[in-house]
Length: 112
Image (cartoon, rainbow, N blue to C red; front, side, top):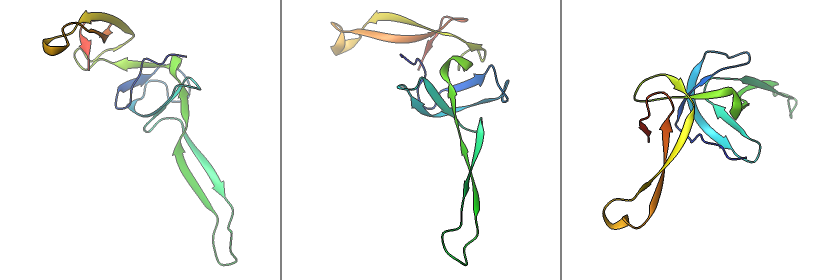
């Protein structure tokens, strides 16, 4: 599955227990079709004590969210929108190459 999101993208969550929250993507899992958003889908892992004098712990971490349940927050217009692609010609030394840019569907500005 092709994921249109990248690390450090600001996204808004559209469904689930964290609906309406915004956060930054800290990890992309393309083979699962999921992303990990900072401060969203917080989960706990319970660890048993390993030694006699050690205490058990509850470790908190950010769980993955399906990529279809988030929308990119455009840095130009500030709205949560979908992503389109536009292929354009390169500039300068790379004039013979084609560049694939991500485009905001609402304001049609290049994202990156």
